[in-house]
Length: 545
Image (cartoon, rainbow, N blue to C red; front, side, top):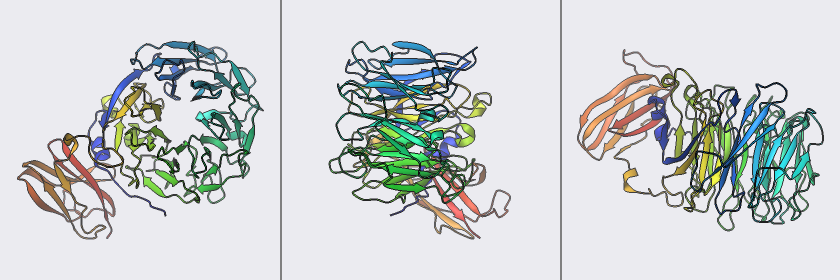
């Protein structure tokens, strides 16, 4: 069943009104600034984690790229310990790479020894042929490659834009590696083995339409159809079967042998939406007899950027089709929701995988990362967020938080996974932030502690939509100063309805659709924000004359 949830949640609008970097239902437990200065760039463009040295704790690996050098660009990869978190890297390696848009990282156990391994997609030679360097984990792990997978041709976009993923695609309990090559319209799958990863591809998947950029994004690590074997999702952002560059996401079933024809496909909703360009993910479900879900977005829906964007959920099951089950539009006119779509980990320890999305350009490129906790019925309202600093506070620079976001696993060993967010698409304050979710648990929806209970409630305005006037009803649990204001979708204040002290109780406020000057406002979506002390609630309403 399709559901498109038009929800404007409590905090995103409040974030646009305040100017500081803001967290909601999460704590930043580690902040790692870029270790190098310009011309080194791309810090946090790719991040992975695993217990590579078999010490019982996760390590976090990211990299910097320097394209401003004579000859081939350089890159440095840094590995940081989490026991405890260290501001100084445990290992640093510098190598050549083919360009300023990579390399890209992935972690998995491709030799089945129980120790995480590292894969690095890069272009170390002058032949424009991509390579995947495999660094096997061990107690003496040093980020030096033991095996090298060579792309079958040059100029095919091999592994570019983070098109690398891992999962057990043939059901032998050993991780396999998949690498996309979007200019070659292909995905190459290499099976893991107790002797090491297979250097030659075991399976090659091809796009169903010429030049659709099949393989620009890929995701695995979960079983969507309940057969016990991980499946694979592949983005093809230039698929034009329904709309010009509308895009398409394909789902391939894992197996032995693996299916080489897609099980289902989901199309973008409009021309230029490029569905599948900006990350496709399978979100695993740890509960027994439960299927994983697909998760991806389109920042260019319903129009080209700037656009609110949309995030899509495709629920797995014993059978499913290519129609989305849930979609959530971006929270602002310029959100571009869906630029990053990834697995957040099980951040609340309810045995269900959670979702994270980045919005790089939201609120004038301040950016944000949003978390949705897995529940029996996801509503679309986000559960946690990290929002960047307003450009007016950083000399007009752009922070662009949410450029990358993904799980790093349970780095502090408390039973809950953590996730990481970066801002490499910005132009200042480059860093990666490891965050811990502190909000309600997804299974029960109960707050972690009473301090998170709101002191007020505000009902949806009625009628909604409205043509002449509407009533906003709100309830105060204690007395205090109350502010109720109307804003347009660009965040500009239209009118103040309430600005006074009130006792505890229930109140009605009427808005007649007019601004401060008494002029009728135009049709469209408007936001109303109730604030008492530090608490605030924001909802949206629609005026249709």
